[in-house]
Image 1: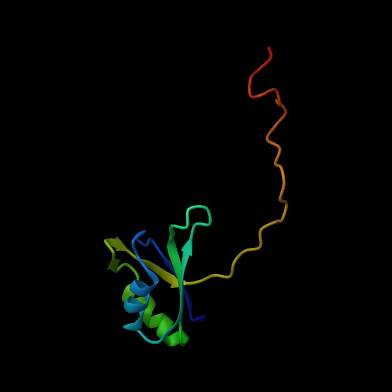
Image 2 (image 1 turned 90 degrees about the horizontal axis):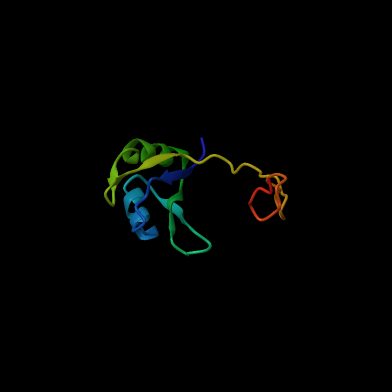
Length: 105
């Protein structure tokens, strides 16, 4: 088992310090990473917390999954590796009608 955890359903007011405090009760926290929106620089409602060992990670899951933090019930589970997305930047085509969105008939 990994010692990196996904933490979801976070209140947008939750800080990395709040996460650190909550998870420290179950072991040593080596890293907290609160995900932020690139455009608005506001929290996205989820984070990743890395515990010192898999045993501490399991204890944190058992103790915090479903527990309320900031008025919301947390989702805590083992983080899955990020899936590769196809690169393909650029323009996407959505169909034939390119006449400004109106039908010509």
